[in-house]
Image (cartoon, rainbow, N blue to C red; front, side):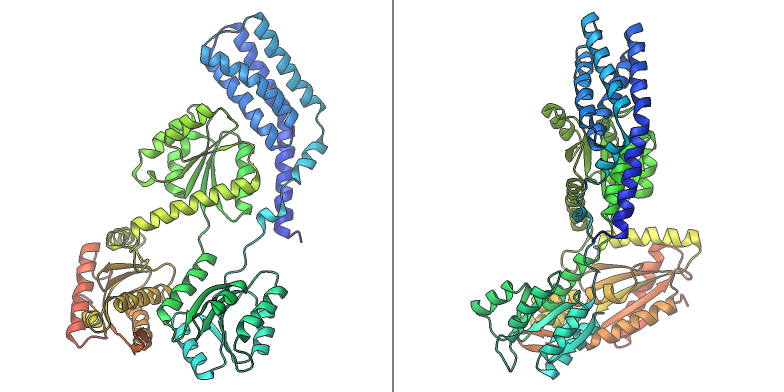
Length: 553
C-alpha cells in the first residue's frame, strides 16, 4: 500500500526532476559561455569551472533520468580533464570536438520533454522507505503458573515495562492479533501440551504480517526444545529459574533497537538540486539532514548540527572535497566523524587518493536510493558504536567518569546562562563489598547493571546518568531543584530495594543511599559535586538507604 508519506515523497521527487529539466538550458548555456572565454585565451580558472559544470551534468543526468545527456557530458568531461592534467590549450581539431559535444548537449536540451522527468520520478522502490515497526514497551507474559507469571510481571514493571499476563493460550492468541508489536515472553510447557508455547507461536507467526518477537522460557535445556524455539522465530531462550537481570538485558536490547535517535547527516554539495534530492531520500528514510551549498559555511554547520556522518561532493567551487575533509580532521570534535565522498568520478586512482586523504567511503553518482540509505546507515551506526565505546562504561552502558564530569561542566554553564535550576545526585549502593563477598563479583555486576537500567528507565530523557566509579553513580537533573530531585530519586530508591537479584538459586535485595545538591546553593561544577558527595556521606552516616539534600546550611 502506498502511504501518504510515500506520495509526498514522490511529489517532491517530481518537483526536483522538473526543476532540473527547467534549469538544463541555462546550465548548458553557462558551459558554452565558459568555452567562449577559453577560446579567447588560456584561463585555468575558467577551464576548472567548465570541467566542474560538465562533471555535474554527468552525475545529474543519470540521477534525474537522462542517461543520454550523461553519456554526451562524459565525453566532454574526459577532454577537459586531459586539458587540465596536461595544461594544454585546445588546437583547432580539439576545439571542433569540444564544440560538437556542446552542440550535442544543446540538442538534447532542446529535445527533452517533461515526460522524461515524470518517468524518472517513479523509479524508486517503495520498499526502500517502508516504516519500521512501531516501538513497543509492552510485554505479553504467557505462563500457565499464575503465581510465577505475576511475580515475573511485577519485576518487569519495576523496570518501566507495561505487562499483561495470559494464563491461557486462546486469550493470548486473540490479544497478539490485536497488538502484534508486543514482545512475547512465552513459556513452552502448558498442561495440554508440553510444547504448547512453540506450537501456538508457530501458528500465530504464519498469520502475522511481521513476525512477533518471542522470548521462550522452559524447564528444558535440550536441543529439541531450543531448535523448536528458533524455528518459531524465538529471539532468546531462558531456562528456569529465570535470572531476571539477564532477562531484562535481553528485553532492553530488543527495545533499544526500536528506539534510536535519527541519524544526523550533513550534506555538502554546491548543486542545490542535488542537495535537495539526496536530502529528500535520507529524510524519507527517517534521518535528520542539514545541507550546505557554500563550502565556506561548513564550520558553522558542523558546530550547530554535530552530524553523525558527512556526505561531501568532491568537485566544488573555491575548494574541493578533499581540502574540506582536511579542515574537518583538524577539529578535535570531528576527528572520527565519517566522511563519505559523492562524485561521478569512476577513476580508481582518484577514488584511492580521496580515500587516503581523510575520507571513509566513496559513493559514485548516481547512487540508488536504497544503496544511499544503506551506506549511510551502516557508516553512521558504526560511528555511533565507536563513539559509544569511548564515552560509555563497558558494564552498565552509562557515561563513564570522564564523560559525566564533562557533561556536568557543560550543563552547569548552560543552566547558569539560562538561569534555570539544576541538581546533581550522587548515588552509592549500600554494603556493595558485602554483596561481592557473599554472592560473587558476577552477582555484584548484575546489581550494578540493574541499578543503571532502573535509573535510565525511571528518569527523564533529559536527565544525564553516569557511572562515577565502582558502585557510585551520578545523575544530572536539568530544570530540577533539589527538593524535586530528592522526591524522584527516593521513589527510585524504594523500587530498587524491592528488586530481587539471583545468585546460585538464592534471591537477595540491595539498597542505595543518595546525596543531592543544586545550583541554587552551589554555583559551579566543582562545589556542586563536593556538596552532593558530602550529602551522600551524611546519608551513609544516618543509617544508609536514605536520600539527603545539602542546602548549604
